[in-house]
Image (cartoon, rainbow over all chains, first blue to last red; front, side, top):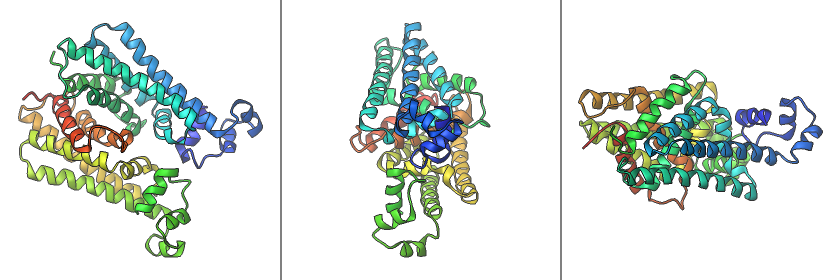
Length: 182
Length: 182
């Protein structure tokens, strides 16, 4: 999977062959075939794993923090740091969605919907508690996730600040964006 | 160029041939060659035009609004609406940067740096005027642009709200994010 991520990131999904992936992984195409019967199966495994990771991050953070403000801050810090640190895999996960087979796409879409629903619930709870004021909950929740996901597009190993510091700064920016005043 | 945008968006830059572009444009490969000597020249023309469009949008808006709050709100409204309306071309422009030749990449990078610098100046002016409070000007300016650019990734023709309404909502969210309280 790591070899596939590198290959997809370097030349795009469509221009990558299973032979490229096998070579990058140091195995024969036949050996790769044992694990993944098609190129799209590798992409699906990468995409599902990335989306499950994100969903778990949101679930864990919300379970740890009952307060919507604490939960939002921590969620953004972790979500942003992850997208900065793992920007190569995150780019593949985000930008090659259209290349998934219809069935695989459905599975990934369901994971995204669940994650988005949880973040929407969090913003709704913050608004209900009087901590947040937003023009529209759906758009605000989308903006929170969008900010974090797009870090993977522009972040590079030479970027400053570090993933952790960027996460802290974004945590503060997002709380402001949601109309929170400490 | 429009035919190339469609082809790149549908199958990725690397998997698209000049013949695909010529066919989509209803011309012969030889006729296409008169305008663009290589596939990368088409990508460069698309990328440069998109980045120049964005730079002009920022310059025009800043020239029209002396007040940093008004300028920021209008800039975000226009920037977001454009990325929603023109999400197909914006996706190609954003996601195929690595496919540009080194010389072409330099030209596009310079346009991006100029745009980013103008937005950074705008945030700096807002902070100096006491209208904005941000943890870090560089990160805040990056977040403003990032939010707008990422609209192109998730927006689809079936998305709600409309590009214009989304622009208004994002304008409000960004002013909040920059610590502005009306």
